[in-house]
Length: 245
Image 1 (cartoon, rainbow, N blue to C red):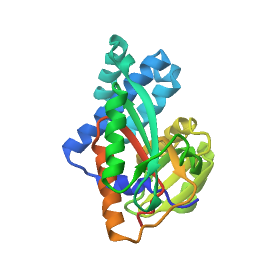
Image 2: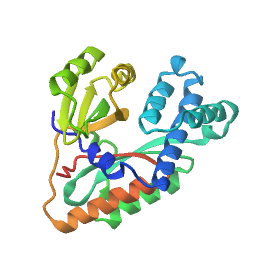
Image 3: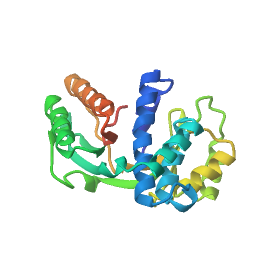
Image 4: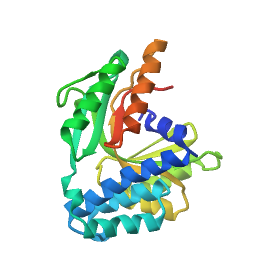
């Protein structure tokens, strides 16, 4: 499997400013609240969707107190029922396929903002499934190997024993995949128990192929568009097939 471009975003934000970290925690908290409401339980052992979000939160270094407080808030609040999950699809500069996952309490506002970002930076918002068919939904666990001390054969063996389906190496990380997008939680737990440092744990939309941009303006506009999506509080995740090299 080819390298996973999501790592570039992690690399870019590693050691990020407190404001960026707080923003990430806010988005995860919103996802956690909805998971509690829709799953009907504040116990990750009885709510697989919540378990997945908790795993994602821990990989993002969200403090346990924050996680507990968010779950307690969800159990005692009806506000989160206003949130709905919406997916937008479109094309970035140079025809890059882009999927935007949002969680919003105002569908019109979010749709307008997402469309604006596409238009402003040379892209175009498309219709449902205009690009989704070229992505596979998988569980993805990204493991830190910044020091280069993890033996690749050992990593592969541990990943397969944990229940992973695929494996790749990209720059300073290892990437572990589960073909079932909802099966990554026990795999992540097993790898964490073996002492691996997890940088990201979640279900992701992985592109089947990647596209390289050669035009400098397209590259700049694509990065600006992604930054705008990331900074929008309603946007949970952005997936694309840009090979950032």
